[in-house]
Length: 217
View 1 (cartoon, rainbow, N blue to C red):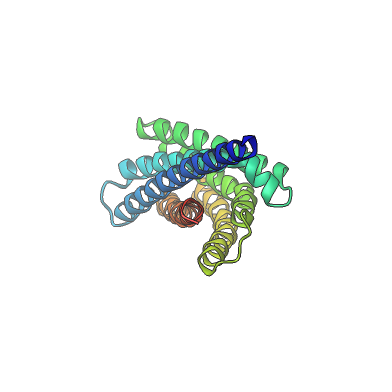
View 2: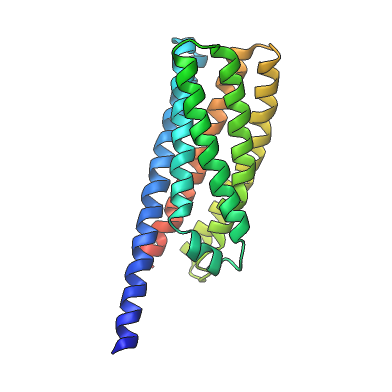
């Protein structure tokens, strides 16, 4: 009887954490999509100096949501993914700090304080957060190692998203540095934010798929 009750409690906790992670990942994907759309509009010449800071704020929110999504599953991921607790903690810290820094820089840029330099710095910050956060996404993809085909597809999609996130992070850092030294800064910042938004949309969607799959496994 006690064993059954313990199993029920464990399953309820498992489902609760998966649901929280799915919600956070979904919010990340939405925020990433928002940043992506705003960056595209800015590149099209529609109020670029206004939309770029807003896009940065949206991208920062995406990082916060992603960090929260991984945090919701941190302990179980560390256990089930064969260790990796340090990588998961580092990824969460990088993403949440990057998100807070990006939101702050975006707000300062939006009110007119050194707009272009701050946006360039935010691109570098986001690139670093993507680069250091990618191992956490990869570890998330290795959790719950069952064998059904849908689980395998979701796992490999999340692992691929982690690799793409690392590459986009390197690109965002390079674009941010070029923008910071004055090479078509407005365009490069918008391209960088567009890439970051796409990465957030990809990784958030992949991790949400993984967590929803766990709920209905």
